[in-house]
Length: 294
Length: 333
Ligand SMILES: Nc1ncnc2c1ncn2[C@@H]1O[C@H](COP(=O)(O)OP(=O)(O)OP(=O)(O)O)[C@@H](O)[C@H]1O
Ligand SMILES: Nc1ncnc2c1ncn2[C@@H]1O[C@H](COP(=O)(O)OP(=O)(O)O)[C@@H](O)[C@H]1O
Ligand code: SF4
Ligand SMILES: [Mg+2]
Ligand SMILES: [Mg+2]
Image (tube, rainbow over the protein chains, first blue to last red):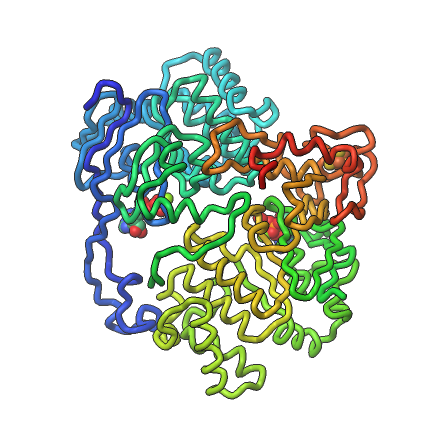
């Protein structure tokens, strides 16, 4: 792989075995009416990700854009190591990901390098643990530090994501959605990762809070030099946080390049459609070219 | 005259046995054929307004003020009148169509039933509904008729719901985030159809959304809700050209643009408050960069200002200044 990338994926592919059902319903309503045919399970190959390649340089931000089901989350899960690729290669800091007997020590080392935050921080935070406890736990897992050093680092992390001391003692349920997302970001930053994957991390936030978190992400990148793999369906948000962009459709990359030029002068028809569909000043809805699906 | 008048609406809902305020004061008239976008952040009370209009509030809700449809108080309607209102005058489209359609009935039965219930003959109802499906861009209506909801994609099902809403020939459409669960290209398709059919039939619409730009694209007026209070009501054409309320200006500035160059977003500090959390003054005061002492103690009333209404003590004085904090697109749009 090229020397200058922190994360590189080539020819990434993921095939799931699924039961033929919803997309291939058989006799109308049979699944719901308990028709015997509905229980005849045929396995079918679902290609979720197909020949995806990209690379991210240190301190750079790459966005992966696509509509629901296009394979974005599957890419993220493979990069972070939660899912094993059917094919292709992933390099992190120049080292090829191996999928054979990964020791827990190796898993921790990988977690130090690549962290991920999700759309809904509530489900990924322990409801019984305070913000401080949650950050402290992450530090204990990744570093061999004494109490004092950890406390200092917790304070620094809280400060970095704009949470105050009072909020540090709160349980997740006492925090707003935006605050919870800040906690998730702080926890991800605790291990000092080289790459932070954000999977629809601002999608469920109110627009005023979304703006705060987008500004926060850009400040953190300036301060720490972390790289982002920023996954989103929202081209406006992507314009704000990424240097390069990959547009995915049905598991495949349809266009890639510098964000500014792809968005100001898209060459792919689907990218144009996506862009034309984003409400913005002076915008009117138009029919997309896509035919009536299912 | 207005087709709908929401008049000093206030709503309390029971939370753990005590009533909690979710709407403080909403006054909003809608003229026949007019589309009004009700926008605001999560928890502002948008859905409560639309549900109050058809009296679909949670059990135990206390409603104050009045809601009038064609001059008649909806709140005072007895059962038969309310039933007639819901089946003939008003139709609602929800964010999640799957939660509002019976999964074990076919799409055809679902559509025809509403008309048959109103006394229409089955054959004529079928003809009406088939034509409607075609008009909302559903190809092969005969096949769709026999399908079940789970066999349709979200966008297609939402178009079926629009057809269902139009089938009863209402004069007022209530749409609560009808496209929020859809992909953007599907959203665009659905909005084109909703907009065209609404205009063609001259329907009035209350369009509830958190997306200011989306509302601006299809509505004549924008009403902004914050912490259960209506804080601005402005013709869409003036929304950007003539900013009058700091919160509306802040909302516009918060949203990045996919094509203009990257810039730091002018984020509003703090978080949106719920109705029950606000103090005696302006609900936006804790986050407002222009707040003065009066803003903390005295609630600004919603008052007329030129082409719209605004609730801000400093609206006249700030009018010229707000443009500078809004998006770069502001001046040109
Ligand atoms: N059943 C209920 N009982 C008590 N409070 C409720 C109930 N439903 C909603 N609320 C509260 O009423 C307020 C307004 O809710 P509403 O659903 O109208 O908000 P909204 O503006 O539609 O938000 P969103 O954009 O998230 O849909 C919120 O504070 C909410 O927590
Ligand atoms: N664990 C799984 N088993 C089977 N199919 C899956 C699984 N995870 C995702 N898929 C399928 O893979 C495709 C891509 O999904 P996903 O990566 O979640 O898309 P996105 O994040 O872009 O919405 C979809 O068709 C989805 O249904
Ligand atoms: S009344 Fe005061 S606090 Fe409220 S929006 Fe106007 S200037 Fe800001
Ligand atoms: Mg996803
Ligand atoms: Mg709502």
